[in-house]
Image (cartoon, rainbow, N blue to C red; front, side, top):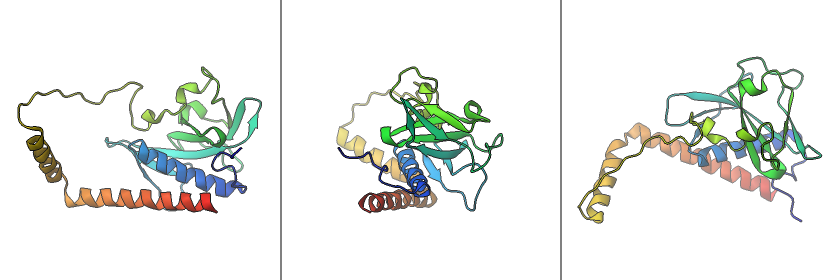
Length: 198
């Protein structure tokens, strides 16, 4: 039986770096824009934002340690629990189950480990499993906007006008930002492929 991805990375620091790359890739897939801060900030690994101006600080953790049905994920520094307001969310990756938990800071404040049960519906942190909407600043089932319209023009003409309007809305700075995000995602994909092949 083939091991889940990431399980063949024996060194815990390398596995943690791999989990951070996985977070960035998944965040992009979820419509978020992840960014790495310069230097060594105390308490968070990424800044993420969606369409709003709100930016969240995310600490990425991962685990492969299972005891019975529970995965134990360490959420402290090497020696101490994180101070209050060190981050906004912990993104905890249960590697063998390929499951993410997006845990608000107030839920895990003062804790050194958290017990996660990906296979158990209704468990303590089940509401935070794959809760990427929290990093978008949304509530579950939230719909940003619904628009309805009826037009009698031909679909080809509508497509042409839509493409023109979308291009007109993009400033050079916006295009540079999109290119930077694309290059960033491609770089992560390349590193993940190298880790998998190595």
